[in-house]
Length: 121
View 1 (cartoon, rainbow, N blue to C red):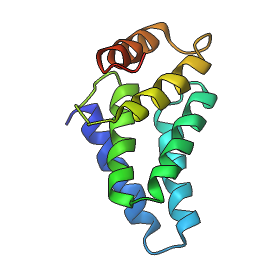
View 2: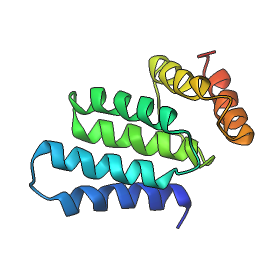
View 3: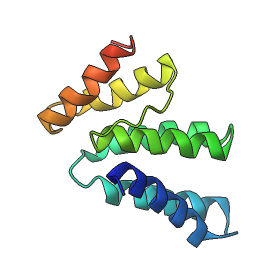
View 4: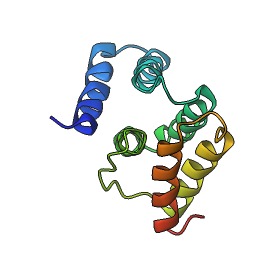
């Protein structure tokens, strides 16, 4: 199993474990999993990306989870081809740029190359 597949599977599992709890509890389970999966990524970057996810969650859980899985693939430097809009790529770029002094240079280069490839730079 690829790291990206494991991340997506673990996201689904975190949501299943939260079950039919309140939405706040379910979102906290997802946030906790997201943050713990990327301990080497600056907290500001994770916070910005999760905030973007929350906005998408209000428009539909399934699409939002797919988006978060795609973001996870970027952070794992194993982009899975998730279709992001130009606005999504811009949000991702801004989240990564804000912490560029603290983020791993290889990860920064990887994400920014994909941002450039998708016309959001």
